[in-house]
Length: 317
Image: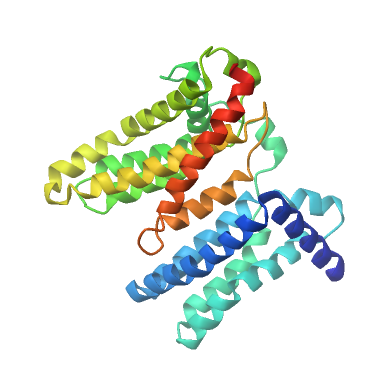
């Protein structure tokens, strides 16, 4: 069984590498090699417990978002024990480092998380089908043309509402508004992973240039309106840090624009573009790597904007 699972994971990895392409794989590995150790070191230097919390959150996110436990269960695989092994291997480096530095409680906590997480039940597909209808699932203040935002906000309303309220309530504290804006950016780029039917594109009856430009402009406008309340509070209470607003706004604009053009560069009616997450992950990393690495994101925006124009001409001509 162990040999079978190793072969199964190897095939999955190989197919994933084929989907994203050799060049992107190389760039992603280089970015991860530079970004993750630097991030881990910065968190360790500030407070070793920050690093433990960060990795614990990442591990929990992996567990609650992975959909393969149903498939493994049908194969007769004891997937809980398999996940225990996988999570323990992923956490092994951190467990050893914390143990070497005599942070025994943290080391033990990470080990226990890897062993306990697999036995925490996930939300089943059946529960999703019969999901309770909340008021935010039927109310919207936006035009149906902004269907990405309507659908995205409805699916993540409790999380988005919590972040937004935290931003408004604690906007007087300088770090809050930039952090909340960045987190909202990470959520918003996920709105552009599902392609709409062809009919929803054809109703625009305009050129491909105008269509893509309108999508970008409306995305940035809606995001700006979402963030405006706590940024106004930030500027009122922290006027000396005004320069943070254009810096964070530039990063968010770059990532959101890339998400839009990347979607329409790969647009196929009703297609799920989850594989775009790889490039978006790389783009996020390039925003925090050494100086001028963000220029790669600008290059990608220009490149995929042109591809989006060429691709959408087939549907809007």
